[in-house]
Length: 530
Image 1 (spheres, rainbow, N blue to C red):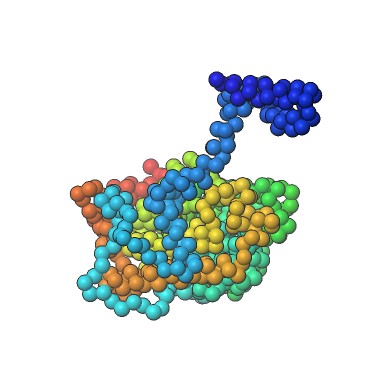
Image 2 (cartoon, rainbow, N blue to C red):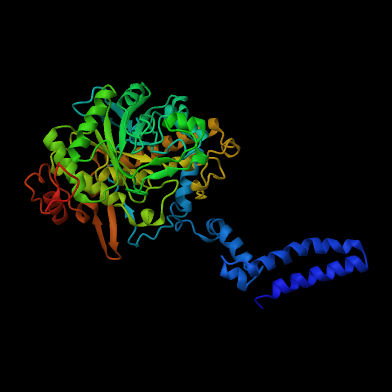
């Protein structure tokens, strides 16, 4: 039975050849069809890489076919509205509807299991407030900042030119300009496609120092200063790590580097473009603080912050000690969750490294509060944010605003095909192939990015008002509830330990992990002490 398809094809080929010679040449058409299949079966028998093909010649190819189309079959025919990952059907549909200005209504009640351990909700008030007519914003900029920035509570998170297409960047930045929200560049540099629409930009500087690097890959202060004073750049962000692959670095293959990418990143053509795992500009917490101050001086006093996914707790506390000792503070810290997305990452890094957003955000908020620094530093966050409910939860537990990458990708046409690393994105978002990204209409998709932001912010205003609050500033951990078990519910205030102002300074806040990590932290090194 294993060889039956192969034997049948061989016999049919022989029969068609015989009939073609004895009866009519028309029978040779069958030989033309079956002959190549017979040769393929012979190849299957003699090749060595795939055991299954040697045991099941011809028939085993159906396995590879089904494996190839499995993701599409699963997404369109098998998964239900709430079980898909990374974003389920309901989450994707909500983004699509808001992007198209379709009212995101759900008939007949929730499909969520409200008694499952994953269920969260926010409490409404008997005395709701009037919905705010203004979109919520927060002012970013500490005492050393000369050009503070009024930042929306929802912005486009980091996606580099090189990771996503020119048309996708144009659409996102044009939407940001119309909606008055910011567009993070990603570490790939401040490209012509970020510049052209004129939307607010946050320039991200990663380990490769793209756009401001010397030939040897080190940081070039003059190149940085030359671009950072551009009026379109509102803030600077140092990328220390990202949630999807913290501590990993990355490579943009030489084959994907166009002349525009090379010019934007200040890298040579014909060579792989490497982002090292760590920075060469600083090696200690104090040096990081000093670099923050240097960048702030070079860019004319604009807000400067850094982005990281929380890994070793003592390392972030070491940065806090360096802030206290040097007095050099970032204007903001962007906390990236381990559930964050990327164009490509090793499975183990995506699945098993880096703190998830909630734990990372609570830790950073606690650390800054415990050090007496929270009122001087803003906190941003990113990690699978797609709705107003996500924003409310994150703000309640410590964030000042949220950044969104995949949600905005979906708003401009992404279908979650998960082909970002292949350069063959079917909708032209995550590709550098002009034949593919020409399909992405910039004018139409920019309007969708604008609408996604506008309608999400309007829903946020409605939810905040329903909770009896005038602005999100009043959100606290007690405003989000989480089911712990079928019979137990806790607010985030009960589920997590939250420190009081300055409580960490004597090294005994009562939280075992934080106390131990504080003792191990040193402003002079990222290595654990003791």
